[in-house]
Image 1 (cartoon, rainbow, N blue to C red):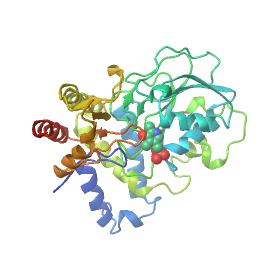
Image 2 (cartoon, rainbow, N blue to C red):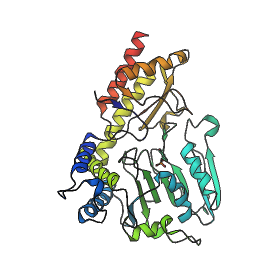
Image 3 (cartoon, protein in one colour):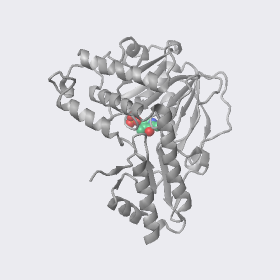
Image 4 (cartoon, helix red, strand yellow):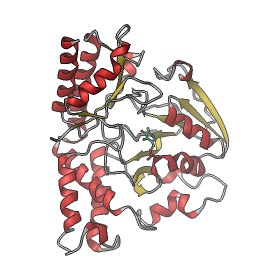
Amino acid sequence: MKKHNFYAGPSILSEYTISQTADAVREFAGTGLSLLEVSHRSKEFVAVCDEARSMIKELLNIPEEFEVLFLGGGASLQFCMAPYNFLEKKASFLDTGTWASNAIKEAKIFGEVNVLASSKADNYTYIPKNYEVPADSDYFYLCTNNTIFGTETHTDPHVGVPVIADMSSDIFSRPIDFKDYVLIFAGAQKNLAPAGVTLVIVRKDALGKVTRPIPTMLNYNTHIAKESMFNTPPVLPIYSALQTLKFYKQQGGIEGIYQLNRAKAELLYNEIDSNPFFKGTVTCKEDRSIMNVCFVMNDGKEALEDEFNKFAASRGMVGVKGHRSVGGFRASIYNAMPISSVQALVDCMQEFAKTH
Ligand SMILES: *Cc1c(COP(=O)(O)O)cnc(C)c1O
């Protein structure tokens, strides 16, 4: 029986992505070779990489000034590459969770780091709102979706300085206004492909402004010049990414996915809010993520946590156990998740309430 996959990452991929990738592992593009053994410089694979990059530009409506790259090292390497390439003197950060604070730690190696606001004292249950970004910041940095804590910034910031965003867990979930961004990055394993590739969208004319020397592999310009083929790129994840992009297009593009994501999130949050056995962990409802839905047993029902985990598992739910820093449950309902799986979880919560 195929399970309902609520894992936070690596996470659900569309059936289309998985079956197309499986076929290409057997034989890739009529080459008589497996995708696993084909040269990254073969014309067939170069065509895959080019098509994936141009489909990303098309789907997200990315302006001309930006380049789309596929890099290694995960989103975590971007915590270092971003300040290496953009931080000359001072940058301003919003501390909204574990991933933002990891980025803050790395940036401190490169220059002055100004943490404008933090919700850490409240275990990151909301996104800080009232802060001002100093005009002399080289950039403003934020993590748009806090995978662990289930909070999300639903709009693109316009703060008077360039913006850098970690969109690892909400890329392709909503339209993006690129106006103020100079860099957006996302590890593939939440909304694009199997782990192993990082999507980087970088504004070309914003590069080259720091005075420090940058190691070749950590310099975005190296990868721009070679169209992500400076060294061997992760061939299989890039192939899978292209299949996911085709799936997104079939779903009505980003606008279609966004509508579906909102419907999925509403269905689940409505259940959390109305079922007396559960409550949401995010204190500010407007900050609730449409990708990672965090909830716990309601007051007085805490002792039933293990039992609900077992109950959900027995009904085919996988990965709903919450992250250790929040506890309770987390249902990751990424772009590829059909609403029928969210409905199955809602049914399971209702049945649990009826039988306990
Ligand atoms: C998962 C995640 C990361 C870490 O990604 P890696 O590819 O494992 O380095 C960073 N930021 C966010 C928001 C994430 O969800």
